[in-house]
Length: 321
Image 1 (tube, rainbow, N blue to C red):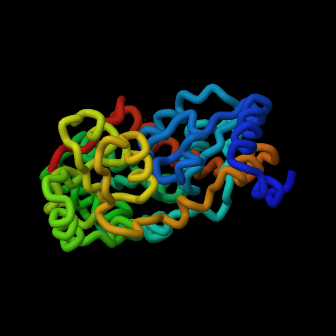
Image 2: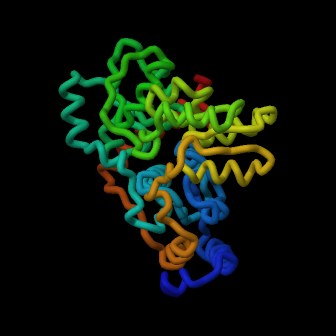
């Protein structure tokens, strides 16, 4: 079938087709929390970048269909070099990942007299290859705390997550001037407005938000940490959540008895929304688009990821603000 034919199919038809193709292709779906709900329902594993990296290591199937953005599919390939990793939309990228290049990182490393480079997984494999260790929003604090106290640290590329980790660890970090365009838009006024509209609600934000927004919130957590927080606090009936809309939709669907409200309207990552059920079915049938990483890049980048996974044995939310 062509992609156009798949796009004319109903969701029920697509789920049946995908179920058959998964068995035929020996495939599993790794799905990020920011995907649209119909795609989230395909997941064999769902979560944030850390949870999906941990899941990727355990995959037994021959094929991984990654419903996320390019750097995530690259990470799955790095951790599973012998497997086929597919990204259903090849232009689903990440603007923050594009805010740093290997060349610029090498220059910064030289300028700052060879600091330890901690790179957020929201980065390309080529940038990871220039790094010492990776981190995610779930484990940034843990990773920073694990590093020698007598070495400077260059944190790439998210200045907001870096600032959060610096505050929580008491370490002075050299921050790269990158950001997530979705989370960086949140403002203190958004928090003020949300508290007025939903008095008594707990305000929970992602650590990719600006420091002043995190300061005004009740807690900060990665997306998997947010899911965990709602589960662990049944006594809290209302939540205002400062992250991408896909996670808010997931929380609302899983907790219909609770009030789950977005911190601000239109917090949508257009790249995360590029993958659809139709594209997922078409990609699995036609083995598109296969992710490859040059061997000389893959070896170094894989090491940075494996160092992270060795330190972080399980997914956990970031500490309360």
